[in-house]
Image 1 (tube, rainbow, N blue to C red):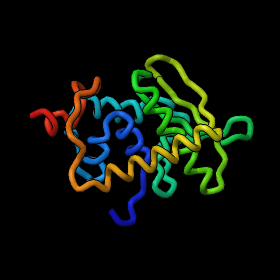
Image 2: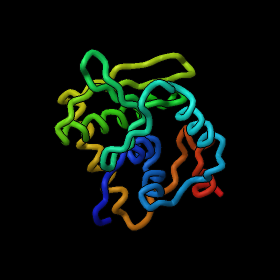
Image 3: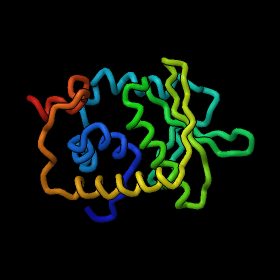
Image 4: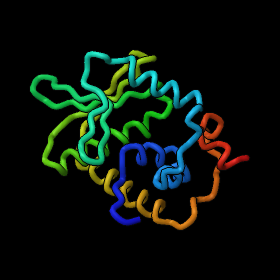
Length: 166
């Protein structure tokens, strides 16, 4: 795919299911009426209303951006910590990409339903994880066909469910 950029959304989807990332990279959109997608939109609009939200910087779409003690803080809002590792990788990806642009920041994973937040910092190990993940995502999205459907714990609530299991 020419002029293709890995995005935070692709990082999120790839970490859940590489097949989802393949669909998303081709603008094959999931069921937009899926209740999980609707709820995610609701959370984005209604929580953390005092923060700057939905900031776009190049190919990055950040949930929240704020300053705390002179440091730039990027926040990623998720409805629960059930998929915390995917959220962590998405946030590390944003921090990595910002660093590539010369912007230093720290991250916060925000789980409003659980009233929790978790600090995330980009260290050398995280940089290596992100670089490796970006390569894996590019390999998947450059395939002619999607990876085979594989049952994972997220399938039941997936908006792409019918594309894999109908």
